[in-house]
Image 1 (cartoon, protein in one colour):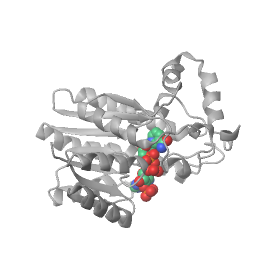
Image 2: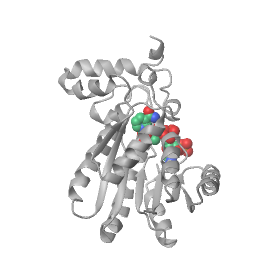
Image 3: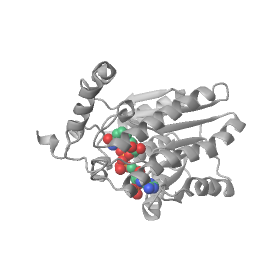
Length: 264
Ligand SMILES: NC(=O)c1ccc[n+]([C@@H]2O[C@H](COP(=O)([O-])OP(=O)(O)OC[C@H]3O[C@@H](n4cnc5c(N)ncnc54)[C@H](OP(=O)(O)O)[C@@H]3O)[C@@H](O)[C@H]2O)c1
């Protein structure tokens, strides 16, 4: 089926993979990101390589009006969004009280929570009216537990999985689905942006390609959650995590995210 996917954070590590997967299947694209120059370069490359139609919308997703502007741009150009991939997001290492600034954490909440929620509110009602549509929200395995030294980031992802799962149930029978993708640590721009590159958490980070493919395929099937990118013992450890005492888990996550912990 040829359809159009709107992908936020399209030129980031995971976003680039989603773009390639969708275009390879003959799907058209609406690429959303902050840098118009990067969007245009990506659009040109994708059009030449896959012979699909690619539109771009430059938007800073931390702005409260971003989602409405994106929706209005699609409407005024008669671009139908069949697939919405809320992929843009960022983390940031640091003590909540003594290191992270108000601006950093509020901007994170806007990009990771507010704008994806607004985009769903706007695009889902059109999808339901048409009786078809797919949404993939990029959450994280961080959604499953609190994250000392990335307190707000982990909480934003808990929100993403929770809201996605609740809406998944509400949409039953409409032909529209919402899937949450929960990746482990991946080799993308994320670790550098968040000051996490030298932490234990990123010692075994995986290539994002398989994670994107798992998420995309899970979205097409309308799955609830897709967990991907956990090498070795990480996947069984994750399912056992709720059985460990909470204070021990908080210590574990804290130690994983101490600056320089990768070498220890
Ligand atoms: N990498 C991991 O270990 C990991 C693990 C679990 C979940 N995730 C999630 O995966 C998703 C994709 O991240 P990634 O790993 O691919 O990281 P990435 O390479 O840093 O890509 C993030 C993308 O989000 C965009 N973005 C950030 N802030 C934005 C803003 N204010 N307005 C518009 N775009 C903005 C970035 O654009 P700019 O370059 O212009 O900032 C970039 O295109 C995120 O939701 C992240 O939370 C990542």
